Image 1 (cartoon, one colour):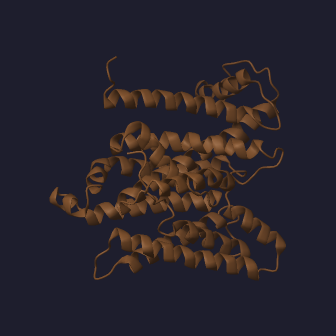
Image 2 (cartoon, one colour):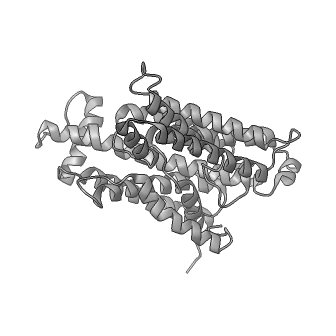
Image 3 (spheres, one colour):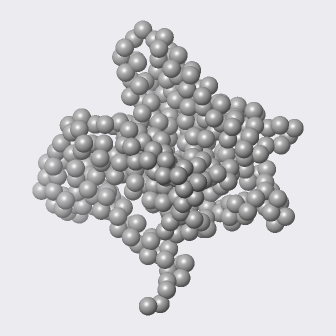
Length: 353
């Protein structure tokens, strides 16, 4: 039997991933307190999308109006947001692993997650930015992420030079600092309702997904995805080492800045919107490399699809296990990611290309 070439393997992977995405999307929309017929789901989506283009419903409704509202206004935004969150965290993890040349790196290696947590918890506990009721937690989290990355980069720069090891060590220190700040904010608060809100937010939740959040996240996710894909060849060269990259004409300063900015925007906006969801940026790049290799031309679209589908299944599990209550999605990703992390440590951090 003739062996498949790399492009043929990637095409096969792409087809399988897209089929899984469609099936997972339908299952995620179908599952819930209200059971909806699968054929209704497709018909509602057709009416809401193509029907809006033609100005009329293309399929005669057999369902009540509240069913269409559940599908379109509640479940579909959550599915799209889940997909972009998984894809964004995986893409940020891929960038961090290329930047640090460390297979155990993830989006939070620079303290981005802890910084966003501290910013969001500060807003929740103190009530600042009250004039932005729908966006104050998101804005606080994003500002915290930016402060964390600036602090990490400044601490890692010694004599105008920053190495990957220095960046990782600075990130660990900054992460510990902001984690301590979060604990102080929660411990010193006298309002139990705010403490519960902060604790639940810190371990991730997608319960409040809506179309506004989807639009905001898309504004960040799409440009970052384009940037990473445009620098895909430089990312390949970066894996060879800084000296080799310089020899081949790569502007390391600009490249590293783009990776840091892209990863910060992705991780910061996601954490500030959904809370802390760990291990996705660590697990997904390695799983993807097992199927498509380490060339970023294939890895970047690969992590987007695998990360999105992975997050959809994690969200589905979080709704099934303790129904009708939901388990925070950060707990689900940690239960999957932590054993994988330990497995990688046992293998010396080498898996998946």
